[in-house]
Each structure stands twice: as C-alpha cells, then as structure tokens.
Length: 162
Image (cartoon, rainbow, N blue to C red):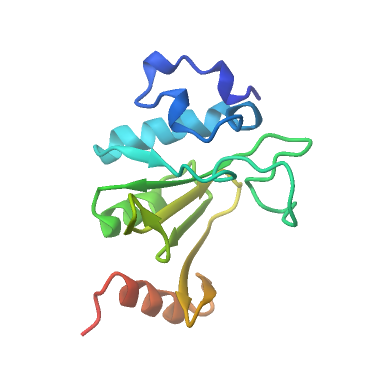
C-alpha cells in the first residue's frame, strides 16, 4: 500500500495543501482516491478537516483508531461538505469501500456549527454518531439488536422529529 504522497493530484478534486500538514505521508493513498470517487458521486465539494489528526495520528491513547498511523498507514479521514447531510449520510452508509462511517453533530466549520463526517476503510461495516450534551460527548453506535436508539438520535439531530 502506498502513502498519499504518491497520488497524482492533478487527477483528483483535491490538492495536498487541503490536508493537515505532514499527515499525507502517514495516510493510505487508496483512502484519498476513494474519497475522490465518493466526491465525484456526491457532486459536491468535500473539505478535509483542517484539525491536526483528522487524517493521521502518530501518538495518543487510541491505537485502535483507524487514524492511528504507527507501524501502518491511516485509512481514516474527517471532513465536511455543503451537500445535504441526510443525503450524504445515506450515500456514505451504502458506499462499499467505507466500512466505518460516523457523523459528528458537535463540530464547527468556518466558525459555524456544521456536521462533520468520518469515513474509514475497515473491513466490517459500522456506523455511529456523536453529539454533545451538557458539555459531554455522547456516542451512539448502530447495532442490529438495538437500531431504534441510533435511528432516534439520528432523526433528532437531523431535526426530523415532530
């Protein structure tokens, strides 16, 4: 697997300076190329999160994170889009090359509240959401055994409830 420095950037929607500095070296080229294919499908710009570690992390307490790039390349990225978040979510969970899909409702982009997406290339499918309540981050993961809780929170944050 090659790192993202090997990408021919003129053949993508992205440029290397859109990504956090020094993280492309520790990131799978296939991840960026797959995000490029998804961006073409979405037909809307994708803005990589500018936060350090949104692409690759070389330290920290989460060696199980798909961002973690010690002795392997990261295959995860956090990003924003101006596309409809409901449509984006629906397309992401159906996209075969992204095993992990998360949506974060407690993030900002351009100094405004804005949902952020996470995708990764883990082999199994998993979906989750995150929001903050009373200053604490809450994660809800979709499970086949208890889909109602996840779908209820997703609807609440997409403001689909009555």
